[in-house]
Length: 62
Image (cartoon, rainbow, N blue to C red; front, side, top):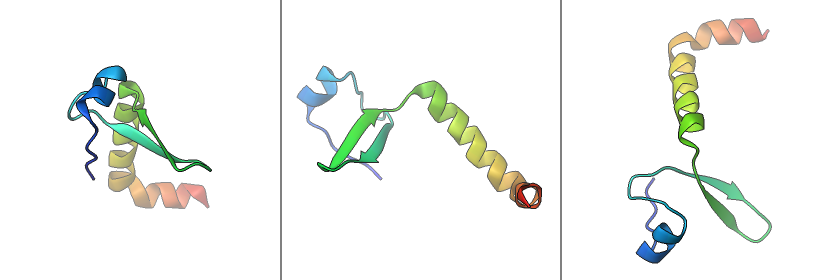
């Protein structure tokens, strides 16, 4: 999913075109936070391993 942010907001929060953001639900609405690159890389590796070893993870979880 893509989200368009005004250039002024991107500059103020150091968000560049193509950067990933985390979305959190709050009582007031939604909160966008610039994603931590290291965390995003770890999550991508996790999702890749779940796809590759999903059956093994399910069996280990029992």
